[in-house]
Length: 223
Ligand code: CMP
Image (cartoon, rainbow, N blue to C red):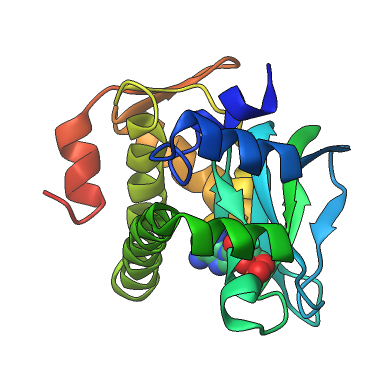
């Protein structure tokens, strides 16, 4: 797909006209990152913005003991790397490819030129940052206010809502879920079994299905 068409589908740039999009597209470079490769390192200086064309990446913090906390999983049409470009501070987190990922890279100077020339990009940026802050607030709330079963229930509802509200087709291992909710793989596996035993979810090799949304919402503190 031509770069301009890809950019048109990215909310950050979707308000731009054709000629404006073409100029941004010309400045963007395509890059492929294999599964598990580190795209950005926390604390490195930041010099580019990244847009996900295909694949999934995770935004992670890694503790001194090697434990990982997943702050967010980003997919098609999402962008990352904007924070260092905005505040000139080092990268706030690592960004790692969860599967082979195709990205568009826009250098700092090109992003800043586009931002100055098209203030509508700034509006898109504010919307996206506000959305991220809401999700981060939710995460802090559930980490402090919910037990592990509540956190798993809330994450499953979020993942199902990315789809049809019922089925989770995105492949998430128990290990990944544990890293997303600040728990261990063993506890997540036990919790998933409990939720299935209570008839709230059904798990098979292809997908997780939500069988009793009302009960799951109650467990997630959203009842
Ligand atoms: P930057 O700090 O330049 O590099 C790491 C990037 O990860 C950051 O920009 C954001 O784009 C992204 N990021 C950091 N924290 C979050 C979060 N809580 N949710 C989604 N993306 C994030």
